[in-house]
Amino acid sequence: MSDRPDWTTPIRALHVRHGTQTACGGIAIVLADVEPHPAYAFTTRFDGRPPGPADLRQECVDGFADGMRTELARLCGGQPPPVRVVLRRILVHDVDSSAAINRAAGRLAAAEAVRRATAGRH
Image 1: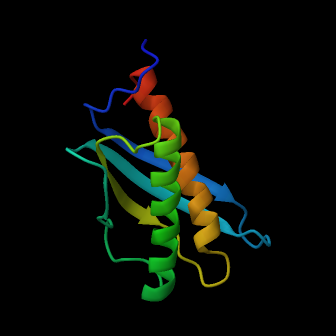
Image 2: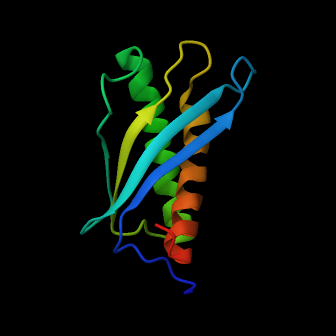
């Protein structure tokens, strides 16, 4: 086992659930993949119909993307690694979804990606 993440193999099905529905802080549920790529990139490729109202969906996606990129950079020496993050599912709820809770979910997903890439458990 190495101390350094191996980004040459895709990491599938990063599932993060953060927060509690109907609580003041809200809830985020996301599913993403992390794939090798020449430089850091983020994209959405929803399984099925895109969730929720477009404006709230974009706010949640942007929050997740920011949390993921920021935490990957923090954990990987200041720059995000050469990967493409593919967001496949995201919960969008009129009351319980927000950019902030999804940003926190992005940070958790990044930490899990680094853990799996370091442990060789893709």
